[in-house]
Amino acid sequence: MNKRNDKLGFSFTAPYIIFTTIFFLLPLLWSVWLAFTNWNLISPDIKNVGFQNFITAVKSPAIHASFFVTYKFLIVFVPLAVVMAMVIALLVHGLPKFKGLYLVAFFLPYLSSGVVTSLIVKGFLSYNGPINTWLRNSYGIKIDWLGSPNTALFVVSFMIAWKMSGYYALILISGLESINSEIYEAAMMDGATPRETFWKITVPMMYPSLYTVLILAVGVSFGIFTEVYQLTGGGPNYATNTWQMEIYNQAFVNLKSGYASAIAILASLVTFLSISVIRKMIEAWGKHYGWN
Image (cartoon, rainbow, N blue to C red; front, top):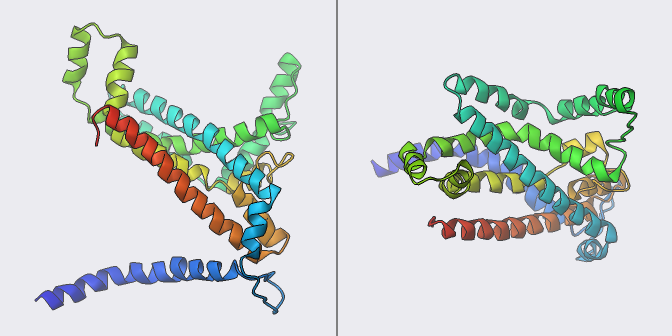
């Protein structure tokens, strides 16, 4: 009977194992092998260069800059996404009815294509777009939203935060729904203000859902590519050139696939270490409020 159950269990998991092997494990192994070569994706000649690609990447100022830009996205995008998601969750939670309908409406941008969303935003923010036209005609203000280093990164971060906030709000509202209303009643009887109630009761009690949202948002910030590629192409002056853009440029523009693979491996290691450190920081904050 046990052998029969084992075979049945394996038959259910086999499709996932095959899928993971073909589309994740084999490409990963191929990428590691590629990182030690100088292949340009065209020439049949492939030469093993050892750790030279990694050494070049570590010393490259362009790679340093792209890593710095990625962390700038993290600093801007994560707070924006969490605040927007929290506002949506609080607003929907306070509705007397039709909560599900409103949540679906906020969730729809998450399902939309990043390419389509980027093209729409690019049209809105173009020189003759509705926003710039209104600013020029009403106030005489001219803003190059995607052509200025000071605004391009914020625009991309805001767009991605808007796209993801509905999904994050679904997670946060589950945390809100789990808080017992008697806790709020007791706080009101003790004279707690709405601000005190939010920061000392709501936020600490939502730690599990906030933890999930923060980790997900950090992961997204390390993988930004589509929106940057469509809106700015990494510009202006490399102000939005994340390491994902740098990997793409090295592999498919400069035809240095081996070098690009080395950058990708380094980026993966840095991403893993960064998320681990941030996770520890969030867990330390949770322990302060009694969460283990």
